[in-house]
Length: 330
Image (cartoon, rainbow, N blue to C red; front, side):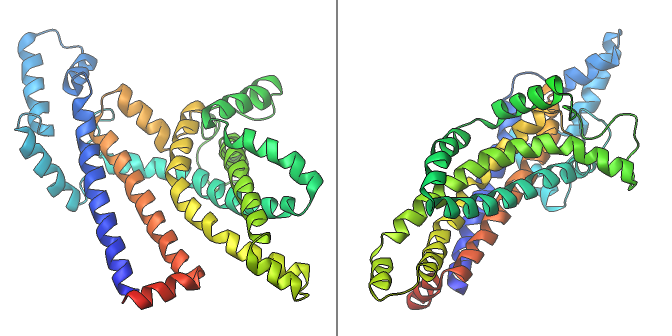
């Protein structure tokens, strides 16, 4: 087990290094100059003042140094916990901007991922035992899992927000309210949260339901299931073993689909102007905010890697064969 975890940590460490390096490179290959954008917002008329401000900002952000030195300084600052200063919201530190957006994204992602996984697996196992439900669920599930998150988000916003007028379609809460722990604000927060959550939940639910349905049918036709049936074992016991074995690929699938779900959440936040990391990335791109873009991507990369590592640990706990294999390899 120790050797397995060390090998996984090495792989995740290498993945982190490559992902953060690419994350650092992408903004610098984008067209445009963020310093020029800042100077344009200042509306300076005198050329001397423009050049003085350009020199000041280039020195402040380190753009006047060689590109390799900028890369090394980036890693040094990163290990100190310094993500830089936001160009868009100058002089606010990037860390402060991200901290304000992270709770919205977590409140959207965690319930959508966990509830869709639990409900989809349960419903898929339930439908596999009932032909009428299986015939209905199968085509609907394929339609849902093939639906783009952004398209479904637009459809829900149009149907429930614009046409029906039941739910708000933009923002994290009403602009006339101030953030607080009052019942009115929490209720308003939940109303703005529901449509982004529903668009993520519905798409993911269809995928998990189809996957579990197919795995249950496969397991019920396996040799051990036929052997138990020949011995006279109750159907309920056979289904219980089939469900446990079918859950193992679903746990692996959760790790593989985590990045897709996170990407879907970011796009969904843009559709609903939800004040999470996705909406923050869009504004950082529009304003050529290198440091905010780097910090946001860094948080997402670290979050996905940690979640995958935890799923790997859960898999070794759930599947006894994995523990036996690890012990034999040691």
